[in-house]
Image 1 (tube, rainbow, N blue to C red):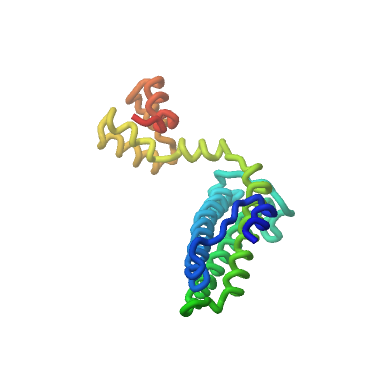
Image 2: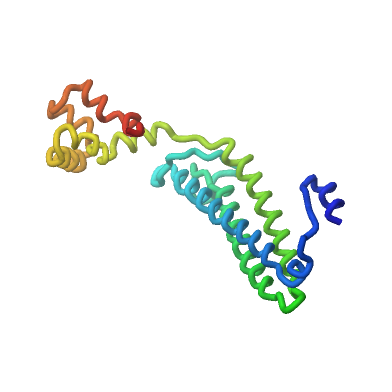
Length: 218
C-alpha cells in the first residue's frame, strides 16, 4: 500500500517501523495537525496585517493597494474589500478548530487501539484541503497583484515625528525634542521646521533626514 500511494502521489510513503505504536497511538498525526495549526497562526497574521495596511481609502492606513476581486463595498463606495484576506482568516480559524478535534481524537487511544480514527482522518484531510486551496488563492488573487502606495507611505515618513531621532546626535536631544513639539503643534514636517530655523544647511538636512539612510545597518 505504501508503494501504491507513493506512486499515485509522487511522495515517498514508507511502512511504519513500529506497528504496535502506530496502531495504539496517533501522536504523529496530532503533531502534524499541530504543524498545520502553527502555519495557520502565521498565515492569519499575514492576512490580518495586509487587511489593516490596505484599509481605507481615506480613514484607514492605506499603505498597501490590494487588487479588487469583487464589486466595491455596498455601504462604502470606493473601498476595496479585503475579501481574500478575510477568506484566509476564516480558513485559518477552521484549521485551528480542526486541530482541536484531532487533538481530542488523539485522546481516543486506549490500550492497543484508537477508536477515533474517522474523526482524525476527516479533520486532517479537510484541513490540508482548505488550507492548501486558500494558500493558492491568496497567492493568485492577492499577493501577485499587491502594491505599495508610495505617495502615502512617503507622506507618513515625512510627517513622522520620529524623524527627530536622527537629529538628536547632531543638535542634541533637547533641541530635537523642541523641533518635534513645534512640528506637532504647527502641523509641519520635521524637515520644514529645521529648514525654517536655519539650524543646518539644506544639504545637511536632506542627508540626515533621508529615511533611506536610516535603514542602513552600522
